[in-house]
Image 1: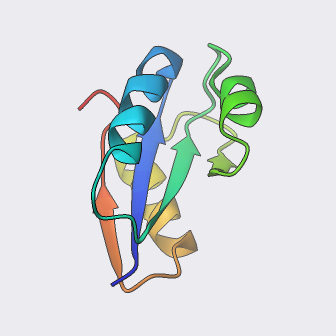
Image 2 (image 1 turned 90 degrees about the horizontal axis):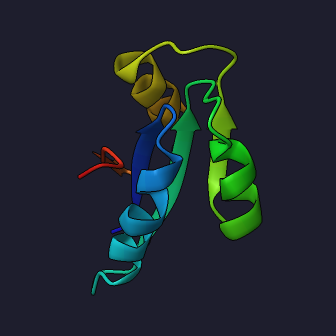
Image 3 (image 1 turned 180 degrees about the horizontal axis):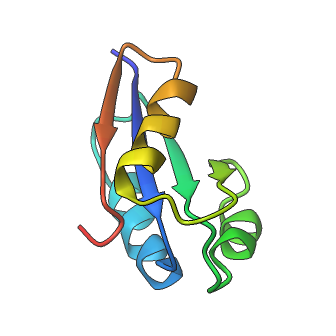
Length: 89
């Protein structure tokens, strides 16, 4: 079954590499990743574009918080299941 992993982000650039590296090591591979950025000012968007161009990123215009970010991600997902994952997990 295909799954979308939604990762909300706010100034968490330093968490993204370990988080995404961990996902890459998973034995289950039938998933897509969607990062929803809450208007980070730490270069998160540029980092994602440079290092993970194949990962879909939605950039919000301000910090709406966790709930809004994951709801936006859920609305943009096209899979029957979603997983919400904090990038510092």
